[in-house]
Image (tube, rainbow, N blue to C red; front, side, top):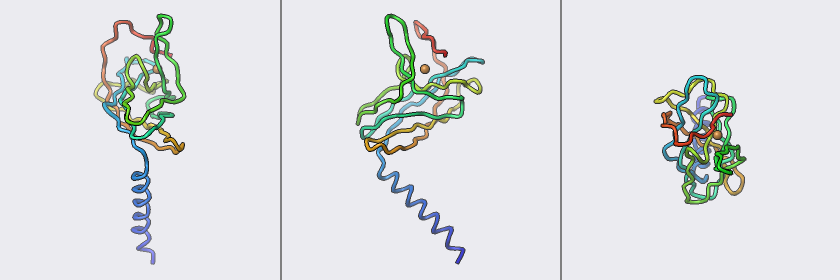
Length: 157
Ligand SMILES: [Cu+2]
């Protein structure tokens, strides 16, 4: 009676993951990318558009490219670009929230190696729905170079 155990288990796991997927609110990710870095750069930003199909909150991001991954915002305050960590990013239903240079972003701090243009970075987004249920969404971001902005913000920590 040992042979059927595997197919049954597999079927049960498939059923479980299917029902989770079917019930969960989802978020659409558009154009995920991360900024290429020069050798020795301690940090880098990642950017994307997020459109949730129900009110959700981005509570954290994870990646193995750096020691720490934070959610950041960047704002002009008294004429100076200030960047700081935020505990969460709200994703209101149906609205596209753009993580972009000069605004909200995912920040890799303590890079293990430079991010090279053309390569990819795996990021796991941790999202919570309105009931507080958490889901993890894998994202693959393409590494790109970007021309410096007119006033390059101090993007190091
Ligand atoms: Cu940052």
